[in-house]
Structure formats: C-alpha cells, structure tokens
Image 1 (cartoon, rainbow, N blue to C red):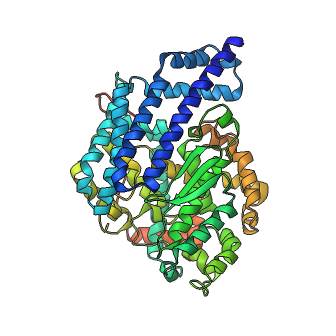
Image 2 (image 1 turned 180 degrees about the horizontal axis):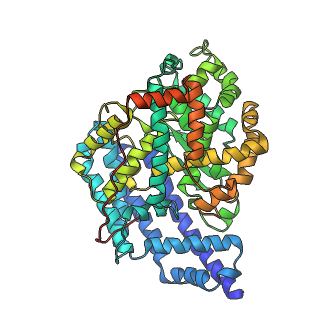
Image 3 (image 1 turned 135 degrees about the vertical axis):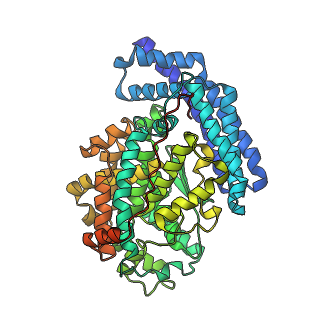
Length: 537
C-alpha cells in the first residue's frame, strides 16, 4: 500500500505541474479571444503552442506513463473510486497520444491556433476562399494524428474522433440518432412553415441599449444560480465558457443592439456551462482529474437545459417577466408575458445561423455539420467548393438561401480545432429532456420553475446530474440518471408537443404538409470503407 500511495502522490505532483501550465495557456487563449488586438493574436497563438508542447512532453514522460499503466493494470482494484477514475482517464489519454511525436503535436497546436486567426479574418471578409486551404490542412492534420495513433490502420476515422469526445459512441450510434431526429423534426418544421398562425415577434429587433442588456445578463446569471464570487462575464466574437479552476469560471457573450434575444440566450446557455463547472464534486479538483472528465455532451445537456428546456419555457418567462419589464420598461412596455414567451420561441424562416436558431430547428444545423464532418474525414468532399455544398444543404433542409459565407460555412469557430464536437450539442438536447422527465416526477419541474425556485432546480441537478458526471462515461451516466438508454424519442416527443401548441397545428396538419410537399432527401451516403491508414486528435 505504501508503494501505491507513493505512486499516487507522484502522479498528483506531475498533474499539478500540468494544471499550472494549462492555466497559463487558458489565460492567454481567453485574452486572445476577448481582449487582444489583432496584431497580438499571433504572439498569443505562439505562446499557447509553446505551453501545449510543454504539457505534451510532461504527459509523454516514460516514468509518468509507466506509473499510470502500473496503477491501471496492477494496482487498480486497491484504489478508491476517484483514484480509479483518474487512472482510467489518464490511461485513455496515453492511448490518445500514443505514437504522436512532440514535433507532430506542436505542428497541430500551431495549426489550430493559426486557424482561429485565419477564421476571424475570413469571417470578417465573408470569404470562404480565404479559409478553404486552412480547413483542408486541418482535415489533413486530423488524419495525420490518427495515423500516428493507429499505424495499423482504422476502418472509420470519424469513429475515432467521435469516441475522443464521447467515449463509447460511434457513427453507427449517431447515424441512428440523427436519422430519428430528422424524421421527427423535418415534417414538423414543414407544417409550421405552412401554419396560418405565427407568434408575434416584431418587437424583438427593437434597439436595446447594451448597458440594459448587461444589467439583464447579470440578473439572468444570478437568478439561475451563477456565483459571481467565483465567475465573471465578458464579450467575444463567438461566445464560450472557460473554466480556469474550481473558483474561476468565466462566461462570455456577444451583444447586438437590435437583437436582445441573442445575448439573452447566449448568457443563459453559457451560464449553464458555468453553473455545471461551479457545482461539480470537489474530488474533481482534489484528485486533479480536470473538468474534461465531464465530456462535451454532458456539458451541452446542462447548457441546453438552462437555455431551452428551462429558458424558453412558459414557466421561466413567467418567473423572469417582472424583472424584464422593469429593466426594459421603455423598450418593451407593451409586451405581454405571453407575447414574450411566444417571441423567444418564434421560428425565423430565414435564419441560417446555428447560434441564433430556435429550439426546433437547432438540431438540423447540427445534422448538416455532422454529415459534412464525416465526409471531410472520409475524403469525399471538395474543399474548393465546400461552401457551395453547405449552401445547398441549407436550401434542402430549410428552403432558404445563405446570404454569404459569414452566415454560412464560416459562422462557427469549431472547425478551427478539428472535428467531432458538433454532434455533442444535439446529444445534449436529447439527454436533458430525458432527465427532466425524472426531475418532473421528483419536484414537479414546471411548478418549481414557475415559482422561480431555481435553487431547488440546482439542488436536484447537483444530486442527480452533476454528482456522477465525472465518474461515469456518457452512456452509463444518462442511464444511471434516467434508467433509459440514450436516444432521440423523448426529445422528438417534447418538440412535437411544444411546437404544435405554439403554432396552433395538429398532427394531422403535419401529415398533410408532408403529403403535399415531400421533403428532399438529405441523408448523406454511407462512406465507402477504405483500407488506408486512419487517424485522430
């Protein structure tokens, strides 16, 4: 037992050094995305790459890797639960980095950091032409990384990327999930496009001073349970949340004077991430496991839970309406509670932006990205004309023309650092609806939210959702909470019930709309299995 204790202490000391360098890297990255002048971004990117290289070398140290493997293969059953989880995750990390040289790792980090700068400029110029070569390089880099890890070859590269984000999931799982989502959402969306009733929404683009939006943002965060003693809010081009440590979780947003709803739901969404980070078990930090153990689908389930399942519910609008009226007394003095509820759920038939998407069509945006990522990783896309393909998929799904590349293929930052992240958004949507069913049985979800008792919501989440999130892989975690396997059924039912009421349509209307105007087939072809070597991050 003494030797095992010494091994764990040695592991902790090394991980403290890793955490220190990761903290510095995050600070520089946060500065680059929120405050740095354009001229300084390249220097920031260089310093981040240097720190990531140092971290990589530490994690590749033979003694460090030997200690982890010893604890995993010999001493595992003698460890406590949290030590076992730490060792399991570290062992997976070794496997993910297996075969990747410090030189290749540095090249990847330099490329991903440079890609962010390239993306910023290309988006400003609304020019995919300026970014296409960088995107092709990112795809090539992902392949190189997977080849290094699996020199014997892998049949489906994208499976590796998916499993890196959500251990145990494959494209077979996600193909089934997204096909079920498409089958449920597209007919409903088409019926809504034909509906005679449309929620009142003309007031949502009225100019609203940024200062008032900032006040409202702070109220929403505090109301939902965000602790400003351990967090802050800033602005950026593409909103995100960064967790620097147990007591430092930062939210970012982007304000639009003529679209207050954009910031409202950006703040609620990112605040959801932050609330999760502020309330995970202490052991995540005392055992140096790192918040990465939470996985992106788990994180998105929480952020989308706060943003949509709570934030766009009639009960939540009732709870925040008095403060809304107080802060925006001049701008929205004649807006009723029901009008606000319907407006924040209005489906804009001309919207092409994922971050501005309504709750119903959001997953369609993700399906497009998922299918394109699969094709990029299987070598079946032409990067020269990928923006044209993107635009066509939007026309097929939504029946709308994409205005320009900034509102099309360049709208998201995610591809600057590789592939596999996007599916987690849709997975999170479905998961939180699954666990809300249990929450409703325990504490009457609607009644609790309507009463503004967000502390009771948070208490339930801490006990049922947050507590085991670091200890279980995603498939096990969602089944532990709900007793059910992951799937799309509950989410499709939820969307159907909500939006048929909002748009005053029936299931018969849905059948009729799709009988008269059949949907275009958008499902991507299954990629041909290749025998060439494959790769991942």
